Length: 405
Image 1 (tube, one colour):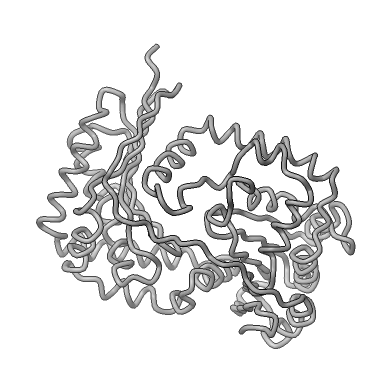
Image 2 (image 1 turned 90 degrees about the horizontal axis):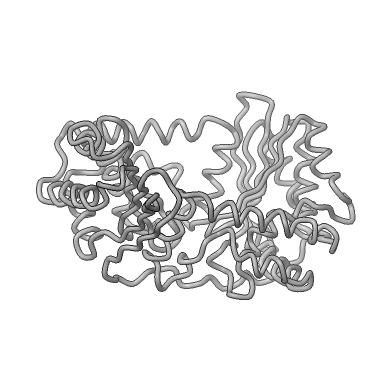
């Protein structure tokens, strides 16, 4: 449902337990930032619940926890998500507090200054985390043109120096009803829930949603980024760009990921870990985005295998491209993909999140059609996916190499 002020509202009733999840999805993340605002999407995640005129200080979090609920938020490249999960008797309170936070967050100077060192410390920890640094290097190499290039956590320089006025300008520019989705899941009555949303979120002024940046990455040659770091093992992350959320081969990408690196019986685990003993661990994944998606393979190995591992991975991909999957692999991959999808829908929170995410991406029917489309994937689709996305550009990779002692 879309309100007159542009807000999208989703309700997924689930009467299994007397719990409810109220979520707000805002179309703003690191792809919407500039050099002067790098990290403000993440910074706002820290500041939104620091009080409003109606709910000063930490009253929002205290009220949620006094009702036995949970309040949290997260930032990605494409969105920021806020949610309150509670027993059903906390539903009205959750809606009113989230609506007020989205429109009237106070963000006083003392709270901003209190959070600056917290976020700067997060940035420092991310730089010391091998997985985080590897992922950021890989993203930068894979997306030299589009704003997927930038990391989510942001710039310590911006966080240290940004003015309150600039934070509020960014907040009021992006946190408008037409740029938000409210997704509710759990033990609610849909007409009553919609009436409450109209009264609260629906009363907010209508403003145009900000323009969305270009997020389709042009084809480019594969590159490898190597970094020497104080780590015990070698960390390798490689892959290639893939389909966006609306592409027909999206489902084949999930199946390819499962065949190659999903579980102990996957090709890469069986060949590189068990048979050739070149890696300590290996896996693959595909994640869709509003624009160009990402197909990745990750591995941890000893430094002496720095050239052997990517060579063997490429060999397996070439063999897969030439021969396609076996019938048994295709069947197993579909079973595993279906199971994972079902497990990801178990709770009221999960169901609200799935609905919110796919509406945000522009494909609201995905929760109802995903399994049907997975069932339709053929061996030819698998080969077509590899031909279209892997073969032309090879593997872009990032490597963390242990410093010599």
